Image (cartoon, rainbow, N blue to C red; front, side):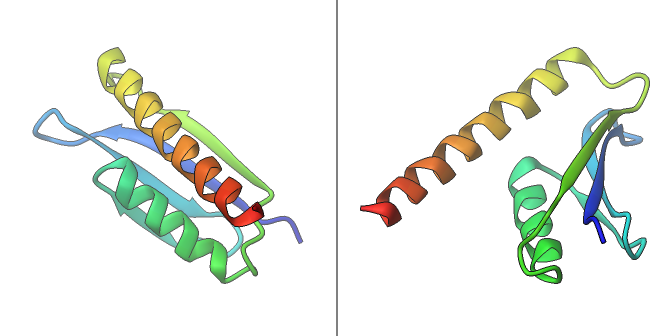
Length: 92
């Protein structure tokens, strides 16, 4: 069984954005107001599969401002960098 999540960046009614995280194995959906909450929730969902996540499919709804996408990318890069640093510390 492949563990696949779908992440969709959407606009809310007030003009902000959020990420809808869907577990394609069992259909659970989590709403994440920012990338930190997304990171926490995807990790928690992944724990149900022993931490194994085979794929995350990303989608962006129409109308999401480019500057919001850029901010999400920068936030994700920062989280990845922090995770890589933490992993390096564990490997020593």
